Length: 258
Image 1 (cartoon, helix red, strand yellow):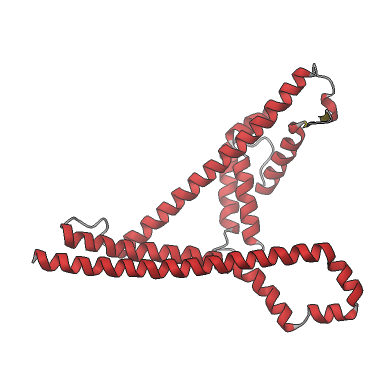
Image 2: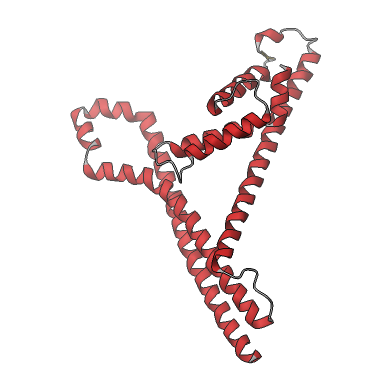
């Protein structure tokens, strides 16, 4: 019986490896198409930005006919749609790959070594992947906050050092230029960004971290791309996340001290 279990486990493990390889190929192809489409879109945008108006001036009415050509319009729509849907499709493929292969690998390990499976049902692996993704996103957000905070701290440090070097003169002008290095008062930009972030979340400028967190959750739920089908929902959702990351505990205290 143990030999049969070991054989079945090896077969299941081989199947899982094959499925994993197939998913990896699909993921690689999709990511490559998305990256290529983005590169083409950025290149065309740069080309149009540099000479688009001149092209319309030279071609005249033919430019509009060219722009509204069904093939051209379809091409432009694909340049917009593929990066958006492609990114979501890649995420979905990774989710399905992990759920299926982890389920099979775990069952194979159970048959070969007689260990107990980590989850009793298929949905348990799905839930585990979602928890892992949430943890990954949380860590990425934390890293972005730390890096952003480090950059602001460095800017304030440089400004304070220059202020001390200059004996505090010229503070109200918002910046300095020594010829080789420009020093700009970061308080002005910090205050503006802080207040814009508060406006985006719909909280007062003197809001505490609990008010900010509650407002963020409401806004994030309202504009989450999976729930909100508006064309600009993804962009607004990202702006909401950026605003929440900026309104950290350290930045709340810094704003109060300005």
